[in-house]
Amino acid sequence: MAAVNALIRSRLASDVVLINQISEHIIGSGGKRLRPMLHLLAAHASGYRGHHHIPLAALIEFIHTSTLLHDDVVDESDLRRGRKTANALWGNAASVLVGDFLYSRSFQMMVELDDMRIMRILADTTNRIAEGEVLQLLNIGNADTTEQACLDVIERKTAVLFSAATRLGAVLAGLPRHQEEALARYGLDLGFAFQIADDMLDYVSDAGTLGKNIGDDLAEGKPTLPLIHAIANSPPAQAASLRGAIESGGLDSLEHIVSAIRDSGAIEFTLAHARRYAESAKLALNDLPDSSAREALLFLADYAVERSL
Image (cartoon, rainbow, N blue to C red; front, side):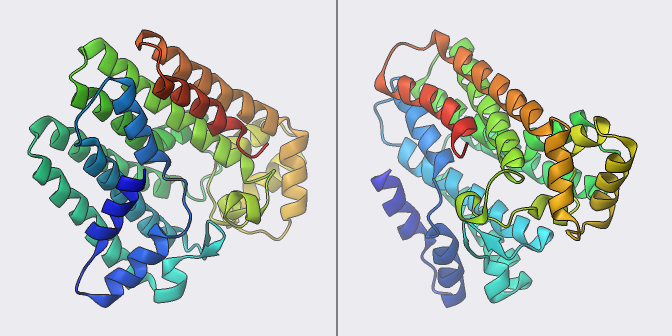
């Protein structure tokens, strides 16, 4: 990770000062670097002994960071990881354009690896992420969004990059296809577990722990799993209040909304959902030989769900 972090900083460099300022702000904001970490661990668990996992881990983080810059503009967010967002400090136009810079930098680094399989996986992944962004936009303010529609967004916006990170570890090591698919499944299920737990934490955590304002999903009109479950399992008056909150994207009665979500059993339902994905992720590692990297991947599956409980 030290080598990855050093490479990230060196490849962020630009002779355009604003790019350096915004890139440093978001890259240096104390994120967990979970996706590059997953790639490094998957490569080690697969027996890879080369050095290409370092630039791959860095460019995976660039892809993720570019999506954060774009997300915050779309969501009109002013807080991420407990700090002001780039769009709150420099404006939407600068944030979008620097996000584009990070995307294009990641593709420059892909080309340098000169491996068509790697480029295809990452190109397909970034395209799926973009589809997920549009799907989520279509769901904003829609109180009739189904659980499956919500899971479709999670798969494309979050889980596919987790899956690419772990699959690429197997690709570098040249593992047989069944082991590559198992590592890809681990990453996909881990991504589901992580994001579902994150959606739950929006109603049980605090800004200092979660790194964003509590109720942000509700304020943005995002129908996440806890809200969808609560609407389906609340008395009519509470369900109507929850629907209205999604449709209006307001926080006028946040305390009552959170109480309704908790009373409906939505927190327990969402947590159980996340834990099922985490267990499925761990089962996907059964075909890999024992190693400290495999143990770390198993630990991360539990961490994804239990990190702030």
